[in-house]
Image (tube, rainbow, N blue to C red; front, side):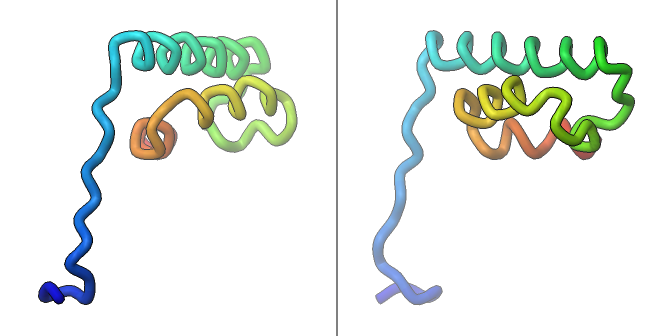
Length: 71
């Protein structure tokens, strides 16, 4: 048992170039939708860009999705 309760270590999966490309495409589509809907703060659009946001969340790492929304 380790210092913090578990000896199990998780190794993050490396993201391939193809995965990054899918993420960037989904991100660009989401932010284009926000621009078209004249949304200033991402995450406050309600249901206007729901499909694009879902794709963005599915195709990108969680840290990549949450970080830019709060800058």
